[in-house]
Image (cartoon, rainbow over all chains, first blue to last red; front, side, top):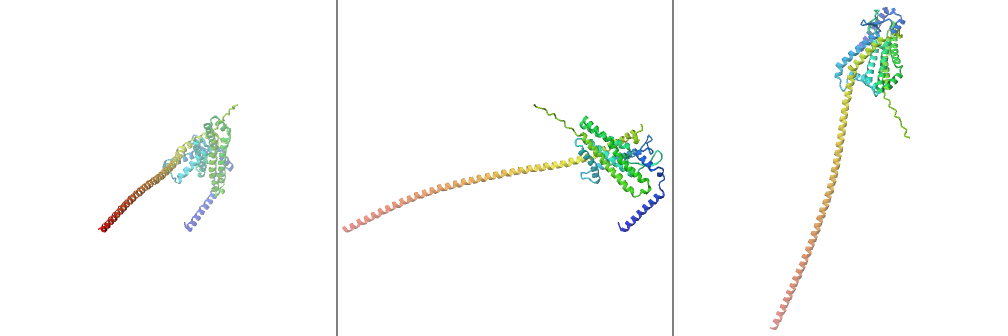
Length: 276
Length: 149
């Protein structure tokens, strides 16, 4: 690219940025001003006022719609990969095949290394949970718009920023760990799983708290028009991308770790007979 | 009952329903096929590795066999060499014995011949002496006869 073209591109980009800034300052959203920051924050945590109708059956939190959207998108992409990409797999992989193999291999190895005795089901579970958390968290970056039951537009949040989604995933992970305990050690496994009775709560609220904090900071930044320039790039990366990675790692690692612990077969203590 | 934090059991179940569908779909569409392919590739390369190991093993066995064969050939060669040396020694001894016998025979024959010749010479000498004596006698007798006349 020549120097002149580069300078022209830079000038155009600066003009666009300035135009957006001026437009933003002149036509600051009036709809947002109807809600105070306190109400926005409270609603982000509790979802009391902004509900979305689920096919007219029930009014639900926006995160449930996000969850269904994420599932639909992920399954469609997975089906496309299954139909068009996987049959063309080669023994010497290309870039995309390598990416898929790395994803599957990472979760498979995570399951195998943490639970060497029983890991078939665990690998599949942590893979699904990892993909759900990662893509679900990144989903809020797209800002998919929806209309609430009150007719207000709302950007769909990350599914797991809703307490109900976090509780469901935390409890399901605990049930998976419990199933590993039963499969590996029977009643003893149940006992060792129930010993960590605080696990579902800690898992759920860790997930909820981490993702909610990202959501709150994003809401805060977008609430004030003055903060809506440049800063969202940093905030988006820090509180979304890193959360996606960290929370995926934390939940899958904890699940695999506890699963491996409770499913590890206990050696029966042999009674030493006294020969005297 | 109003649960704090707006927790809704129905929505928790709906989230669970959603996740179970996602997990099942991902397992059948992505996780299992990719894992199967990876396992298949591992099996393929393990097969190649095993094949290579078998070939190396086979080559080693063949090398050992050839070594053994070479050793046995060496042993055989040495044995034959020793046998040949023994045969040569035996033959040489036989030749020497024959030569000695022949020598003895020649010597004996030469001795016999020499004795025979000696005897012949002696005989001839005797005959000559007798002849000479006869001739001398005749000559003497003839001289006496001449003188008597």
